[in-house]
Image (cartoon, rainbow, N blue to C red):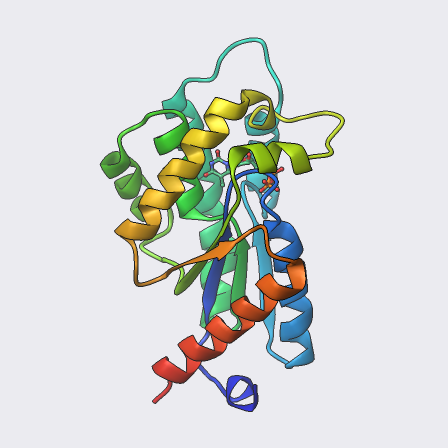
Length: 216
Ligand code: TYD
């Protein structure tokens, strides 16, 4: 922990998983831990995180009668990401802050690629364009089954993605499992059935390990 507080390399960490996996709980616990360790951090969530990106979020999540084309959805997700990266993430990293992202590029690969059956190579290119080539150093994928994710949700008014149903969530999860293999250097899979405390301890240990291995 002491080494972490003197680490001068900013870390970009993203959290991923299907709806209801427990990601936001982990983000919250991690932020508290970073604060205790006096590590200056910025939290971002997607889609959203800037005024413009929040407006795009409203369009994306609103339940509507007309069906939004998968390509439109991808372009809006990545438009929101471009603004967030430009306005918040790059400036924070330049100030040597840690950036903790509740979803980032991999959500587009999993939801629009897996869920909406869009071509992954195109989406990777689209993400590169939107993020100015910025990629997380570490990505924590909290894995739960589609059944479990749906069971845990307590929303009275489900958004467009929560309404998409079991099969959609299962396709998204399967795509995440493929992404873990596609990007083994930065992906870390966590068992979402463990307690929040156990999951957090593993996350903290992995962050420390990453910093120790990358410090010179
Ligand atoms: P949100 O309420 O923020 O859900 P969560 O707490 O699970 O992150 O809603 C965001 C929804 O948008 C979520 O269902 C995942 C979806 N999404 C995509 O489909 N593609 C993306 O690129 C991103 C960032 C999110």
